Image: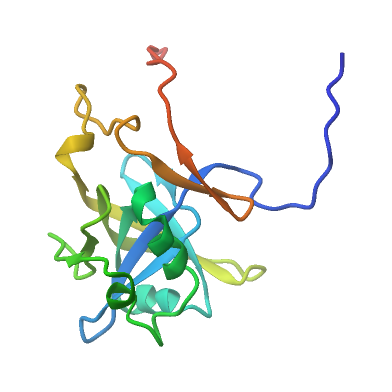
Length: 190
């Protein structure tokens, strides 16, 4: 039996992807926080994380100026702040003050960590991918440090998503990623 499928207008065809709060700083050290509807892995070795921002945004400008950022993976309890930070510009609003989020100094970059996020990934921009046919730039950030709250680390030393409901974004809606399926064991053929 053939399943019926609906053809839809293209929109975020790969989902879910984690939403994140991306922090940057300006030349005077003032922090900014913006919502990225998705962050993604570009490479494991070296560990490169990608974020994209429209060229018209304040975050895009700060990323070009400083070459540093932090990806902060939020938990569902601060979803309202995640949504708010994606709705206003840091040019006009101090989003840390407006949301009550806490900026904490990072170890390797000037951009702060967001204390309320259980995972923080410090990155230095290695490349900026500028597509002439798109209105945004993709910033490829090399991971310098990963900070993980102790209470979400599993027995294997890795984040346990049953203890931390990562926020995902798709179709203009937020979701949580919840539940463990099974551990996959594989061997790579040489």
